[in-house]
Amino acid sequence: MESSNCEKDGDRADFFSALPEGCVAEAMALTCPRDACRLSLVSSTFLSAAESDAVWERFLPRDYQDVMARSAAALPPRAFGSKKELYLNLCDHPLVIDGGTKSFSLEKCSGKKRFMVAAKDLLIEWGDTPRYWKWTSLVESRFNEVAELVSVCWLEIQGKIHTRMLSPDTVYAAYLVFKLTPETYGLEYYPAEVSLGIGGVKSEIRSVYLDPDGGRSRRFHIMPRRIGLFNRLRSNSTVPRENGAQYPKWRGDDWLEIELGEYVCKGGEDGELEMSVMEVKGGNWKGGLIVEGIEIRPKDGK
Image (cartoon, rainbow, N blue to C red; front, side, top):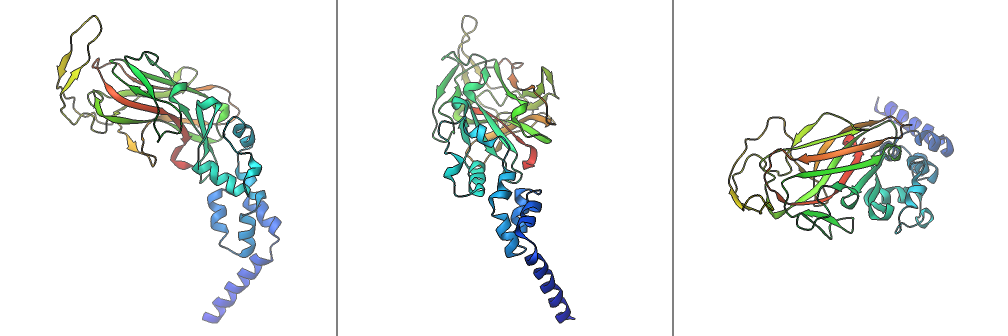
């Protein structure tokens, strides 16, 4: 019986080895990068096909050369040893495009496009007023500048991206990418309202806390003077944690993120995906939020 099983395994290996590499590559190009890597273990023919430019060219977005041309720092595709090397580079090293206002990369498992809209390309209420927001550089950011909240009582951040830039037939999610300074205050008291939608039609509005300790801690702060209205106030209020509220999670790049909502990109659409973060109901002053941008990527890496 054991000899019979070995013979069957050998026959199967001989069958796969006998397949023309071009046919294997054509079939493999109809899968996805993750499946191609798995199939490379089947035989030497499959391994050779899985490494071929013909396969990885199909995994790259059709307009990848046009997108790369929008970066001042991008190497030309021919500078890479193979299309697989180019693909993996675009997955692991986001490319800053459009004059530093966006970044472009690929989802490694699927090859779907992902973008981040930089803080400088977002509409930040009072963002051009130094007493409320300041612009600074951080070595851990992919962009030259990030926005740091000095102090506001009206927090409003909005962003847009054309849906034609996204991969079709894909469920996308948008995320505010940010971090908090050691002096952060005021963000733990009330949740922000976040949403996204097309053409002014918002999806479901969600409640999220930008502080991981939101609604759970009691803190004392000296609140900045509200110009012409009130003196500085000392605040120690605590608001109970809301049921169903979301909290930020750590990414793998020293930043936090919070999901704003989902969008199904069906393809063929040419609208603007509008994203919003607002905390205006509490009326309390807040500061210490550093915004890198809003990232739009395939949901759950698919």
